[in-house]
Length: 328
Image (tube, rainbow, N blue to C red; front, side):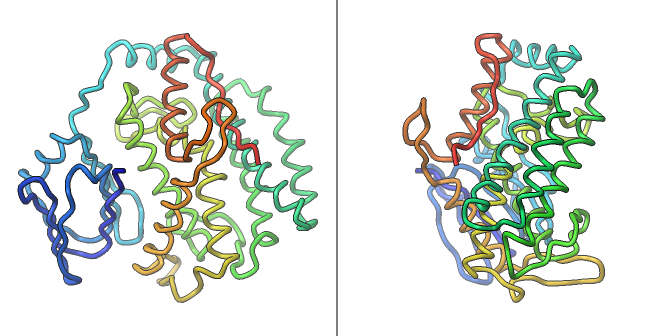
């Protein structure tokens, strides 16, 4: 099975016959090109046009992050699956206010329902302090249907997530959440959320690449001249069950602690060892299989691709899109 190649240290990536050759101060290794799904780069690397041509030939995206784990950009190979019809249909669903609002609300509903799945899981395990938070989210989420524009919908979604984040201090003991801070994150929990979200965004982008969809056209997140946005929309549905559950596991099982972070004035980030630990748990979560009522045993990674296909059918008006909702 093809895997994501993570490059944390600095070095040189080049083509050697039909393999990738990675050289760093930690040594060197050869990886068969057919064993790679995509590449995520966190260190400073050297590469050349010959390598990019090689990646393009095998349809392998390469995602770049800065030192602190922020997503910078992607080398996106020429997409042989591009479909003019789907691009037109995606644009139609963006331009039509009602069609766009339906999709935007679907992404928000999916995310909030999966948030409630997380919270109810811990409620059943005796974390009674979060009961008022669950009640507040359930009540406030009833307002989603009444929203008539994207701006007010996103504002409501932000309020609901902030309610959810209040539960983190009860679910986890070792780190204090305080409040959500992004650019930059100011404590370990915020650093893990930002890092995990970046990993999820690029993982979904790689899955979109393998469909006919255009990642530049989003519905909840504003389509603009600079960004991929459809991956951000899909990520709203999966953040609670992939990123947040990864964080809960790492903290509650004592797999990550203060020594895995570095701090500067006004910011906190995972260090290289911390990133490696997080990535290992994140990849394990993606490869975890669940029993799906329609698909049988399926991994979370596969569910990301399935979500793309569901949108594809929605745009062609073959089947109305419904976001994935976890059963536990």
